[in-house]
Length: 166
Image 1 (cartoon, helix red, strand yellow):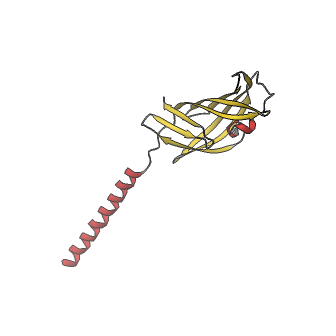
Image 2 (cartoon, one colour):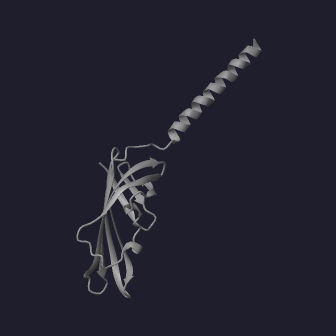
Image 3 (spheres, one colour):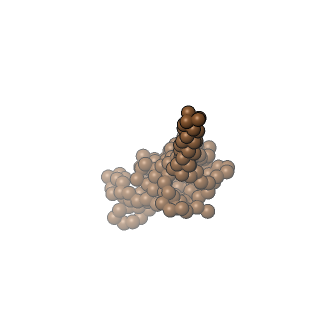
């Protein structure tokens, strides 16, 4: 009888341990939420163009869709540091698929395009992280929640993109 009671106690202890492990695992697991976001980003950095000081101003618009392709548009302008005049511009568009893997956003670029009326007299390619605008590129970015409705994407090049849930 005591041996039978001891087996029941061990069985109950084992069952409680399994249930407790499942509950704790469920509570500690990161919630995978739908990535239906509208994002904007803006950066400014000083660059040297033809031995003159200039400012590179970059603006991003990003639409992350949970189904179908997502899109990104980037507009960059180079401003002369002394006069403030625009001395170059660049526009890029990109369509990509995405998947969230923990704290990373995995992106596969489906297609990319240059904007119309782009000033090709200034080489901005080396000044920007242009990888998301290269067709067939596979990329990974950090994504982290700020609040329940706001997220931050870090591209690793001193540019942060702020996203809001739609």
